[in-house]
Structures are given as structure tokens and as C-alpha cells.
Length: 400
Image 1 (cartoon, rainbow, N blue to C red):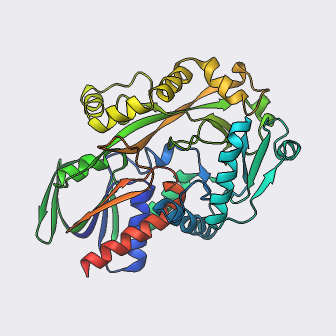
Image 2 (image 1 turned 90 degrees about the horizontal axis):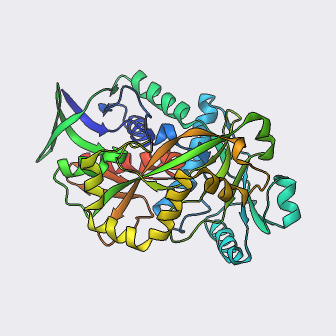
Image 3 (image 1 turned 180 degrees about the horizontal axis):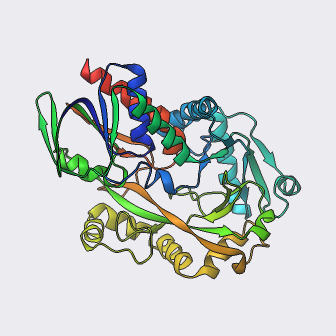
């Protein structure tokens, strides 16, 4: 089978890229290959459903640029396609005096990134937004919201498949990639695909796909599982919308927090624990080959030595529910262990470089006939239509 552009991966970034390619050039034949039996089965379908404002990200970074542009594009798409969303806003709260400097730095970063309506909150004002929240100072972020990203992904997939030149093929696993002078040949279990351009949006396996294509990489994906609890309906009144702590600036995770889902359910989490396989959604999930790949990677060993105390704390909260509850009680003291029921998990594809750095920004690597999206964790869902446009424009430039 021949196609102009072949996209590997049917998550929200791969779908957004296909959608934007067909918008930019309706004559282009675009094929998306997905190994699962449907789209959005992994990171897209297992996240917290937050529409991020862009307050956390370094000004000028790909995360900042794409989150800010993607935010508007996502809202426009949801409006046009009648997808339910709610710009409910969120509060970020400092619990201890030593967190106030970090909170103020976040506020300034938000201003630098062009956010409007940010305001500092006193302890009394925090409780006007969240009556059960404890904090000594906060920031209200009105541009934060909630949406069902699976619904967004489903609509993107529908629009691609309705296009005469778009197709999505599921339950297709890639076995080999053969680069050529003008494109590549992709072999699956049953089919041979010839493509002028290959775009790798394989998420948790993006580095493996890039290696199959002959790319030299200075990074590797390390899987981190994020576990959630749901608050029982009778205690849902303890949280109105979204409550976040001040994050550790040295760690690319936001800390356990409270999130109202678009369905109305209140979730607490996620933590961030090293997963023993790339799609390790359960504590018991273990795949020796993938576990060994992670722990034998020099960059990961450096990360582990640098953040071992943080890692031990995350595992403690994972395996000992009272510790998880204690972290949540710093934000909402009234929450109790019996108020929480397990609510599943997601796995974040976190890129780690050889020097032991957890890559904080989006990372895209290109070669002659390939574009590889190699680090697209949060806020990639919020940013997806912008990332998709960026990648689509790069692809069209290469094809010209």
C-alpha cells in the first residue's frame, strides 16, 4: 500500500497531526497505524482531562508556545464539534512559608506567558473558591478547564476517516522500518506500506520506533505510572473544581492534586512511580525486557541516584494508602482514607537523556523522511492541535 504520509500512533498527537495535514493539503493521502483495537488507548485515554493554561512552562519553550496556542485551538475545536468542556479555573496553593517563593515565581511565569486574570489569593480568599482547602497563599488560574480527551480524539478520528484521503488502521503492529532515499517502507504482520514521509507519534514506544528507523538517540523513554483515587460521591462536596500544590521545580511532575472530571467525579492524584513495563498500569505489571532496558540505561541510573528520596516517597504513597491520604490532607484536611476508592492509572512516557536529565520540554527529532515526536508528556493533550500543526508544517516543508 502506498501513502504520502504514514503516522505511527493513534493517540491525540498522532490524530491531531493527521487532522492538520488534511486541513493543510486535502490532496495528501494520510494513513495512521495504531497497534491497539482503537484510538486513544494509552496516555490520551488515561489522563486527568485538564485543559492546561500554560502557567508552568518556561517562556519561549515548545511547551509554552504550543500550550498557549493549543489551548485556543482546542477550545475552538470543542465549540465547533459540540464537545463538552468547562473553564472552571484552578487554584495553586502554598501550604508552607517556604513554598511562597515558588508560588510567586509561577505567577510571574504565567504573566510572562501571556495569561490573563491571574490573581493572588489570601488564606481567606482561597476558601472562597475552595471552602475545604488549606493553604496560606494561593494563585487563581481562570484559564484552566476540564474536558474528555477521549471524546476529542474520537472526533478527530471521525473527521480523518470521513476525509476521502484519510484512513486509520487499528490492530496493526509494526515489525520493521526500512528507510529509503525518498521515503520509507514499513512492514507490519500482514502488510507492506510505502510512504514518502513517516511521522512517529508512538508515545510510550516512540524511541523504539525511532531506533527501528535507524535514528541515533541521546534519550530513552522511562515509564512513570500515575495512580488515582476517586472521592466517594457523598464526599465530593469537599472539592469544587481543581486544587494543585506548588510543584517541585526540579521534578517534571505536578504533585498529587484534586481534579473535577467533566463527568462530575472528583479524582485525587496522580503520584509518579517508575513502572516496571511501558504499559504497566497495575502495580503487578512486569515485563523483564522493558524493566531491564530502563534500569540498564545510564541516564536512568543517574536520575535514580539524583531523585532516590523522591522516588522512595512516591513508592511509599503508592503501596501505603495512608501516606497518599496524608499528602492529600495537606490540601484538603477533611479528606479521610475511607473517602477514597481506587480509580485506575495512567503511564507517562517521560524522556530521559544520557546525562540523567528528565527532558522537560517537548522534543522533536527530524531526519530526511522522518519526524519523530520523542517527548510529549503533559500538556501534550492541551497542546495537541498545535503540536499537530507544527509537525504537519514541518512534514509539508520536507515533502515540497
